Amino acid sequence: MGDEEDPDLAEKLRKVSDIKVSWLYTRSSALLPYGDQESYEIGSDNYPDQPNVWLPEDVLPGFREFTTSFYWKSWENAKMILKALAIGVGLEDEDYFLRFHSGHENQLRLLHYPPVSAAAIEDQWMVRMGAHSDWGSITMLFQDDCGGLQIENPNKKGDFVDAEPMKHAIVLNVGDLMQRWSNDTLKSSLHRVTLPPRQDRFTGNNKLTRARYSIPYFVGPIGTSMIETLPSCIDGHHPAKYKPINWDDYRLMRGSMQYESPEVAAARG
Image (tube, rainbow, N blue to C red; front, side):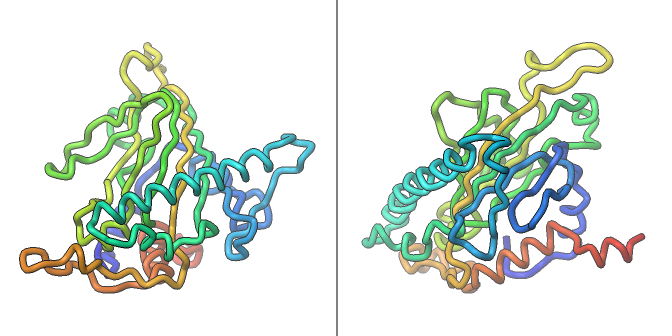
């Protein structure tokens, strides 16, 4: 993504209809409907800007303990990936990216895509998840064996290839910030969720997709971080493509493109 909001693109993004049923538990004090997806958001308990709202222990015993442990174990893996990426883009300091991240700004999202009419997706008036890139540094994705995740071919715009589920494997998405840091050496992958393989669909007039479950772990930097193109990724043939930008400012810009404020929605009638 560039440095400025594109009003036409923002309008298109807001019109995408995702087939999910959603209940957002973080950043709020109660259970709130959120679009058409079913998700449970978990962050660090030590990050006051995004307070967790936990299920009562007697409703789902052990859930908080398990997911908190999973959150921090995922962060340990993410730190190793960030070190590897630093080496990969030519940095001598493998801890360079780690200094921008504390682990407290990350987000663990439990996602459920309920069964939906396959015809609605085939006719292209609905999507399970529209094509998008992730805003932050990297995303680690854990998914079931349903299938349906596709990633755009970076060398052929509009050509999406299947990211077939592999048992015990994590799908790693490069985020927008890592693309900016690396001056496009590492590309933020455009990805979407569509129909699972044909043999996994119900047949007949009311054929439905399978339910799909996935868990993305979004890794983002400290809010005040200034993201600047790395000198190791700039030379005479590859000038810097991006201006420095503050992470808080960037995610506000991306959020305004993807989500419409209640005031604007009310004005639309």
